Image (cartoon, rainbow, N blue to C red; front, side, top):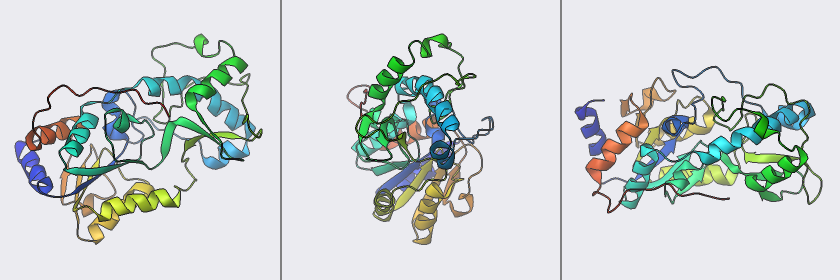
Length: 288
């Protein structure tokens, strides 16, 4: 990253309304791995069809998630999240559309956040739409599977960006159904093969259309759910700025592309465009 790149980025953002679209790359410095980063191993996330159509897949998911969600819950915002929250407080960033489910923008103090793909901390019944917190479900799953999580190592366990932990044997894990109607429970997350709710998409498009610049941070834009916002911004003449390690599907649309870490770049931008904070930013716990 050069000073010239940061100066040009600051020039593009100064005096303009900025919408931000973030992907997994903005959370890697918080210990949450990327799906498609240059150093990321191949991953095959569970699809909606697998989860709803096969009880063995569903059992495997809940067993692994019962362990993995704790790692995501313990994650804390990094300098990139805090920089975006600081830019929002300064009136530069108008809102963040995030493809992540980790709640780290909210934990950093960001107020205008659209969780495009949902959040890890909430569970929904597919039959009656009843909601419960992931914490409460953890208590129910622990009661049904006493000691299961404690049999696994606390360190060195591989956990994917959707809180799916690598657990070898899940055959004996007991699932829990909805306490209201007995229906199937599913994390309130948009799975591969599932559509983002239309009102949420409309809200995200509205944020982009009300902005002058779309800043993409930490996303390869491989899936259309994120790429469409970059395409809409470029088509309507808005500047598209991309901060990401490696190629993205919108590189040809970018007014400016910076290949560097999100924490480094966003912190440098916030330091130049905003007054020094009165006190250090802190990560706040969030319960849904």
